[in-house]
Amino acid sequence: MDEQRLTDEDIAFFNHEPHDFLLSSEDFISLNRDKFEYLRNTLDNKQVVIIYAWRRASYKLYSIWQETVKHGGTESFFAYYHDHLARPGQSQMLSADLKVAMFCHVFGKDNVKVLDYDASQRGRSLIPDFMNIIGMQYRDDMIQSNDNPDAVNRSMDIADIEVIRALNHVFKVNFGVTGSWVRNQYVKHLPELISIGLDELKAIVRSAERELRVGNYFVDSRCEQIMQNRFKDNLVNYQPNNELASIKVVSDEWSFSLPAQQLIGKIAHALRVADE
Picture (cartoon, helix red, strand yellow):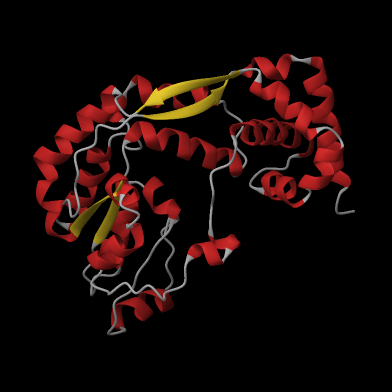
């Protein structure tokens, strides 16, 4: 959809099948208005209903940054979010109301449902709440993601994320390797990496660690007010949120350590030859 190249066969399948279809992808949230207009105009025989999971911005910051690192990103937490935090009212990634307003313009306000992710997470009801929106009954005997480790994208320790970020840089600059290859190899060969000094490297990383309290940023209070005022009828499980959480971040100082650089070199070499 990003390249606006749905084939005639794809279009015929969706438009003429007398069924409901659920289209889900983490990539959808990064698409601009013209891509969604393309979807609307292409599948013109279908009513498109958007389900948007609203997570408070300062909680989401950390999660999205970790995901960029897992998929090859090299920027630090602070560098990655500088532009967004400097203009929160213009950032669709941080200001949920901007993205929801776009969906309403493209698909019609009555076709946009907003799931309060934080409320569902607190109640451990994210999947049942989602299924309720799409009109399906949740059953306790349905497959749980915990039963399939490959289906769970768990948060990683900040030290692991920082090591992977440094390795992403090494492999991108020196070998042209990008994407999630580094993270996949890192997890696959973890015991070997520990044997050559990974724990020592992570200890160096943690020496530059600091804790931040999030949940009451300006962008959070701004978005909370606008979402209630403009999209009250679209919120399906809204609960006011005033909780604070702690996240751990790391400054770049650890990477200037000679022992750290030597260990990164050893680990990078081990990953290069591991599957040869």
